[in-house]
Image (cartoon, rainbow, N blue to C red; front, side):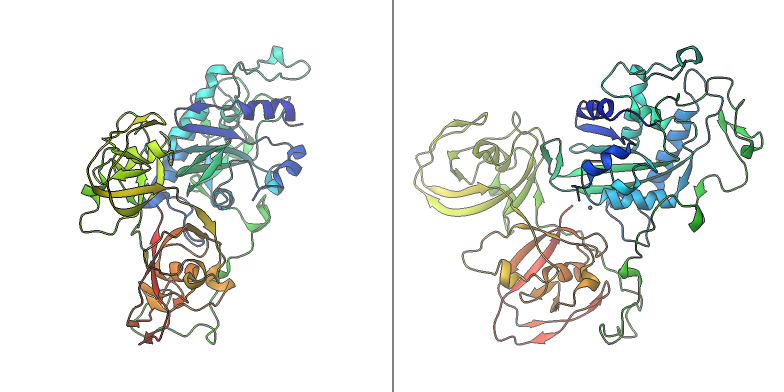
Length: 506
């Protein structure tokens, strides 16, 4: 049987925390399936969710993860006599991608938990390579005592002196010879009750699964002395190895897979001509793929003043980095803040963000006669008995919308300009809805928000995701175009209605 549920839950509750990094290991127990049923998808482009039909992880990250696994597996102590060389499995990669897109800090999906092993890692703040998590999993070896033969009568005990060792044991489980991983950036991810505003989520799936109770992770002995016969006596860097040219990229035949094959995404199917007009001969007849990484939310430093940041621009949404509590600049006022105040300092003082950083909205308030000083949330502000332009800070709300939701319904343009919530679009709006999209770059506010975002390349239909909306006054005309599988409409001299733009959230 697999490791005991109580032991594993105890381990999960006390899992490794290294600065802003946490990791988890799959329980591999059928008793946990009911518990998991209640759960529900950097600036570097390689860490963005990929569409189906594309790789779930960049080639370079895949190779780094795979090479480090094999390096660590080959250096275990005591030495392993049957440690198998690990290869990449694209089906495991796909299943890892599906789970990474849920952005749930739990193991899953439940129907696969008895058929795969799984390690999870997440971090936010300072950029880290995915190998950081792999090394953290392996470093649990410091708390693990290998169960020698004399310890295994009648069964091998579970030797772990720390909170958890099962990331390590899965990583070095001798017969877990296939791996597939995926990376996704998750916004407002709940990690043990803490909301991480921009978490980089790594999911690695293993097959065959490890962590079986009553078994050591590998056999002790001279390297490669107890390899399965299928390896034909091959050995590389202390690992059982078969040099047949297929070792690095394992793609199983359909009947060999351990998974329930997910439904083929509709985005890969051609759309009926009657429902989607054909693009002109001058356009890419596939999808005319366009990607937009333009953001409405601006990244600022801890001491950036609003006055300095907003010259000549429309500024209302900001992202503050972690660690501003003791490094923020001068803040003037309470509730209403002088334009010369630090943006992040004002947000900390108002309790909109904490020292972990985060997003905030700014609203300009015109001139105020005076600004009072106070000490709140660890920030001491200054007073000012002189008239000056002011601003207030507020949280950035997040709302889920449907494929058909329009800006006219949800957040129409009004004066004075107001903030729209950050929005989350579901998957597959490309085909699950044929709501109108009018315009290109600037869209009529009767357009579907999510389909406009797909058209603009801000999100991908296959993954959905977060976006920012900026309502603007009406346009004299809207130009249609064919992009990302959507043909938008043209409209001249609209009689009413306003417009909007969509922006990426990265």
